[in-house]
Structures are given as structure tokens and as C-alpha cells.
Image (tube, rainbow, N blue to C red; front, side):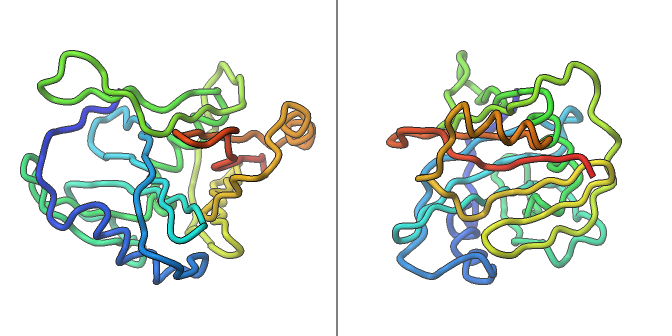
Length: 216
């Protein structure tokens, strides 16, 4: 589960994202960015927030994975999205999650083991809050995930590639909401050793591919 707080953020997440997007090679400026929804993974150590946003700008949909830390991530200055003041947790450093090893491990685990998004527990609320984006990995691995040694992410053509030792992850930045995600297509991907993370949100008729993993 992911524990979240009722808090005031300055700047807001959308403000950080709106400033970050125009600097990315996969973003096409076409309208004002708007948040569609988000999903979270859980950091087992409880130290790093792992939240991925689905954003629309014009007619395009984008995926923006972020990590929130209470301290700077060494060697990741290039992928610092910005800092924000959190009224409960204090200063937070916000990173492009594709450069954060905690996110890379969480994403690989979700895909390989068939996990869903983390359950959201909000301080002061007795029941879990539903996620605005639901996700599920296509894998069924019962054992552990291989040890990962993530390299610097490389972005281009609407995707970000992360070589992580035994695994190679692909994170979709521009989401193809019209792509075929039928069982036959998924089976073909698995035949070639590719496992995927699909996601869905309100108003979307079929799941969309968010990320994938293959063994190097």
C-alpha cells in the first residue's frame, strides 16, 4: 500500500509537470497540460513516493512517472524535475522516475509478477481511496526479481529505455490509446519474451500499454 497525506504542495504537481514537459524530446506543445489521473507503486522501505501521472495536452496523452524524496538522489541532477514544499513532509525533491532505482525495481516487479497499482491509504480516512488509473502487469513470476543495476535512461520516439542489468525496460511517454491490446497481441508479445504493464482510466474503452520488459 501507499500512504499519502492530506497536504498543501507548493508548487503543485501539475505546475511542476507543466514546466517539465516542454523540455522533453517526446513532448509536442499543443494545448495546456491537464492531469487525467495517476497510479502509485509502493516503496517497501517507505521512503520514496512512486507516482505516475497520465497527462493530456491537446489530443495527445503522456505518461509522467515521478519519485518524491526527502533528500537528493546522488548523481541524478540531470533528472531533477524540481523541488516542492509539502506541508506535512517538508521539502521534497521530485525526479523523473526513470532515473530512480527504486522506481525501476518497482516497475519491473509489477510487470514480472502481475501486480496491480498500490492501494492508497490516506491519513484520516478509514477506507482505501480508489486509484484514478488502474494498472496490471502481464507476468506471473512467483520468485524474486533479478538484481538490477539501472543505467541512465535514454529517451526518444515517445519512449524511454532503461537498461537495468538482466532486464531492459521500456516506458511509454506518449500513450497510444488506439493501439490493439487484445489477448492475441499480448500473447504474441509474450512469445517474444516481452511482458507488459497495461493501464486504464475513466473514459478509456480499452487498456493501453504503459511499459514493458524483456530480458537482456
